[in-house]
Image (cartoon, rainbow, N blue to C red; front, side, top):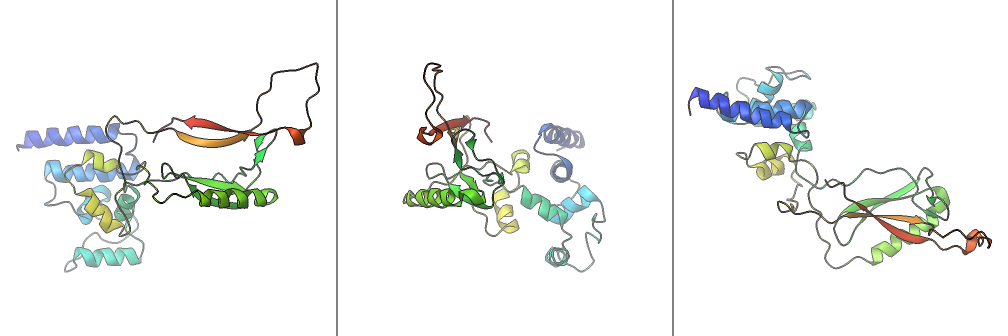
Length: 247
């Protein structure tokens, strides 16, 4: 490959990285550094040290040299890990392809006849698995609704099937989309020994809508000639709202 071809390949890859909204900040810097190594031959091989060198310069932002004469990369990795001075490794670890469950809302989800759900600050929470998709959601309750929380989670556990599917990956893997030359699963395994491959959707495959359970009072047509029944006699129903926001 000629110098002109290298420059063109580098420019095209960097342009794709910049256009990707998932690749920003320090992750973008790391991606550009990898592109410079692969497309422009600025280093002999792609290593954490070479990415660190090109992305942040000869000194790590938190202090300390990138290379030390006579030290292997394993020695440097151990030295920086002990002192929590390994931003590139941590950056790539956060970009591992995986399924990421939603964050807790800290709001009580107990059903209420009028409001749909309680809405108070929760004091008890646990993560429940959707037995049909493998996706996980938080179940949270305030001190007033601990009995409901206990009953709901207990009944949910009883419905566990023999085989629970793995959820599709929905986070990470941004750099892997732009740098297929790297064996990313091998790297992710090194960055996180507990990492396991997560199922991927086929191209063009749309995922099933995520169903969020919202307990609300059924809508009744107005009946001005008749008084409404007491709240204790009204029956709540389960409304499934499809969340089609995607990944």
